[in-house]
Length: 371
Ligand code: GLY
Image 1 (cartoon, rainbow, N blue to C red):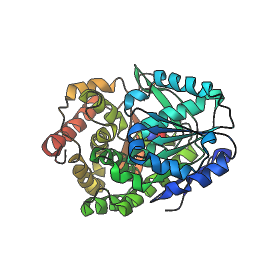
Image 2 (image 1 turned 180 degrees about the horizontal axis):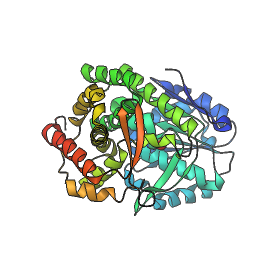
Image 3 (image 1 turned 90 degrees about the horizontal axis):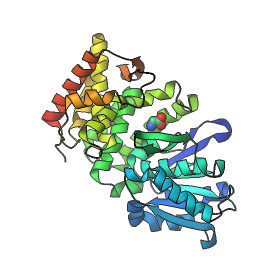
């Protein structure tokens, strides 16, 4: 697929995705880091599988290359870990002519991007997303950050990368649950964009090979085109970019209620998307006819989510703590039909509860079929 441009004037950058694209790494680095050192941070699990491929593609002499692995998992996205890396990089006398490269999923990208944003008031950086979720969502748009004990991503900065380079070959070694996580964001994009993506998703699900590069490439391209447009229009998440939170107010509450780590973020997004669709229909019953196809797709997706005990009361209670609450406002992105998102603040609690009951009923009868 051709590169997708995030058009942010002097901070514009390409998102390059495709099979075997990692080979372009050395040319990109020649352009963006012609002289300085390149500090590469790998997710340790990814490094064990593909570290040597990336290392070869860098084509850098050892005196210009510094490589480090990071423990996988959400715990790595912490100020403690950031401090350790600051110590290492300052010990190496890093300067602003050096370059940082993050190779991994959302955790690696968010943490390493945050270090790039804050060290010496900003070091140029780039991302090689290695999970489906990072390829379609997390690696694009410059959101970086770490977690605080009061919540996820509460400390962070917007810091756009110089390029994003995703190689579809890396997806073949992802555990199935990680593919499902990416599908959570993809099903979100399908709702936000409408017809074309619904068709792509339907074909992908019908084909049944969840690792098929051709189908995944189409879904990734459609998601990225949409996201690049929103980031260009609203880099700092003050208006339209908020549509990307479709399904997420529910998802954060579901993740929390399940107990952190028991359901992965993308899995919760599948359930959150289902609940957001039902909320939209409850608020605008005349729209139900537009959701026939999307509902079927979502039901198929729900089957991919591992079965966990989810308590309605707990989910409702967790909603109060959602990060997107603004001065006591509970904000939901909903659809009046696929392709037409709108934002509602403080919808009737009874409607939210009814939408959750519908979703949990479907999940309890169909979820966990692949787990
Ligand atoms: N993942 C949502 C955003 O980048 O705004």
